[in-house]
Length: 253
Image (cartoon, rainbow, N blue to C red; front, top):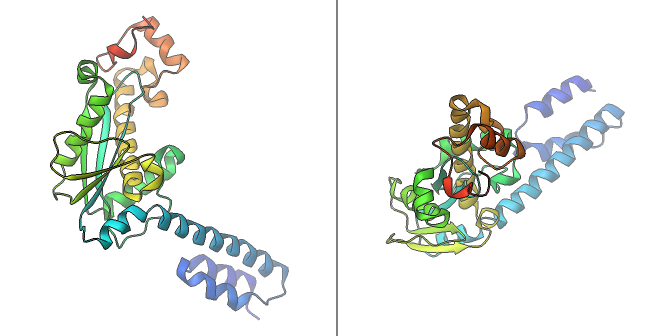
């Protein structure tokens, strides 16, 4: 009978697609240590199957367009509409149809660690990524909705490949000669939009970390420019920085 330590090593080294036959191999082992091991990996396998179902559900739009002959499908999302400081950042992502990245979801539903992990997987495997950034002075000039659409337009224009269709979170982009589909709560219902939201979030957070080094008293590394109590108190004490949105803080000063 194989020692439990060696069985543990087998499970530790196996790939997810190899897990089910490995569980079946040891499922009748009566030793408590093996039973506990098997129980844990059964739960892991169940979670994996649940994730596959979820990923299939949020790929419905993409699969529909692929089945109708569309080749390059770009998902577009933005982050940074609500903060008092910093830019609005958009991403246009062409997600590879033959790649499965577990955990892709609305960036707001993921921990920073998980976002960063998925970000690097997307950076490595994405067919194309385009970024768009609109700075605070432009936001003040044209308002946040128009700034959001402009950032999205920049993101699309920065793609190397012209998409056949744009899947966009909730809005339409003016001045783009590409078919568009606005999807309400798109970052929860489309895998490409969700992936774009993760990339945009990670990129904007990195920008705010750098701003925190320049303006340490505002805590941008923690609040990312949002109107936390500490951030508002810092504005009242130190005034505004060049990255603050003047139109957002009129009731504070």
